[in-house]
Length: 169
Image 1: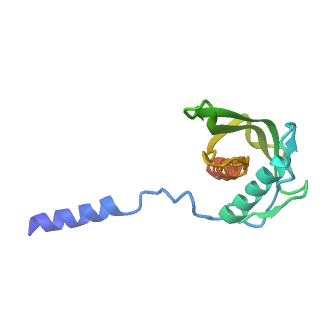
Image 2 (image 1 turned 135 degrees about the horizontal axis):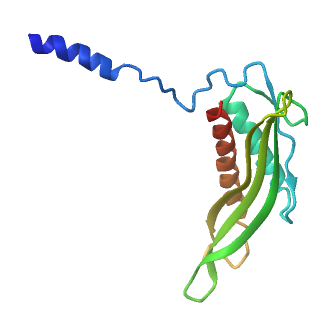
Image 3 (image 1 turned 90 degrees about the horizontal axis):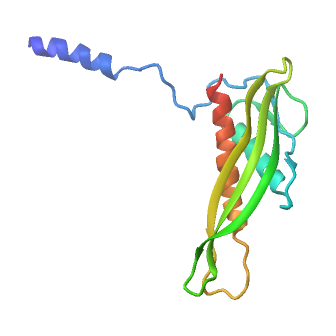
């Protein structure tokens, strides 16, 4: 009987909330504020890569926070980015010496600034992401597979930016 009186309160104490909150919870981050994500700058020769990355960031902020997200240049918080490098290279070869898998990589410069104060909330000039895609061994026609890899990288990039901003507050 005495054991139950000690164990029950102890169990309640140990299993009660520990003060942490879920990272995916929207909370009140951005409530009543506008977040501007103008289209990033692209200094590579990859067509429209900056548009895909910018749009992924906009969608992730809209999904994960209460910011009113816009593609304009002005807002309470401004996210600016530059695609500084894009490349593909073979990473696996088949028995005939032809590339069977490619690595796709991007490097970004990103800054998140509070417009009213000019305070930099987040900055990284060397964000790098890499993904892979397979080539079909039976296909005689070239089918570009890098757009799917780029989409996966854009989603990871956007998630990283949102997490960095949310967790620095």
